[in-house]
Amino acid sequence: MKTSSRAFVRRPRGVYIATGVGLVIVVLIALGLFLPLTGFLAATTASTAGLVPFPVLSVTGVTLLGLVLVAGALLLALTRRRPAAAWVWAVLAVLISFAVTVFPIVAVAVGSADRAADIGPIIGDLWGRLSGLLPS
Image 1 (tube, rainbow, N blue to C red):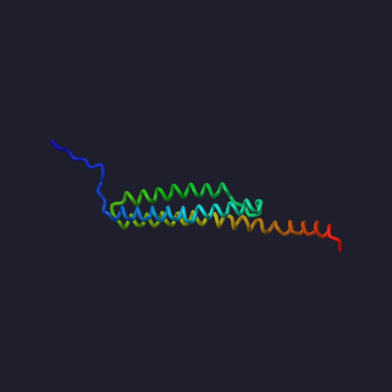
Image 2: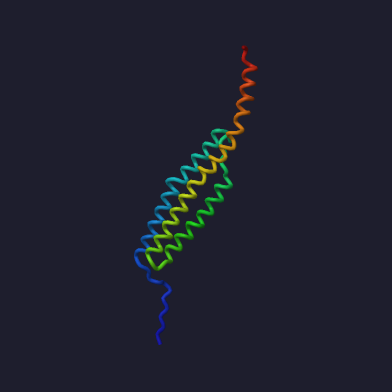
């Protein structure tokens, strides 16, 4: 008696193409947009002595959550049996990676807007100190 058990389910080629294209685009977004952007924003924070805040913990948390979600979406794309469903999951992975890439910009902009309200008294204090030192 011969029993056959297939551990590997044969999937259409479109499923592998969708997952591969999604993976390549996600890697390009990570290497071409996310890493340079976060490096630029962190360098801006360092060069302005903290005047432009960079929320390291929230960016790290969103990045790790995005990594899990993207990996899950690509895994779901790989395990689908229909290419259309695989494309949906691959596109969702790309959209999640774009959202993770945009988050540091939004976080720094919100933090900078909070700091902008504090900059007026600092400039006024500096002006007062400088105008007191300069003869009139």
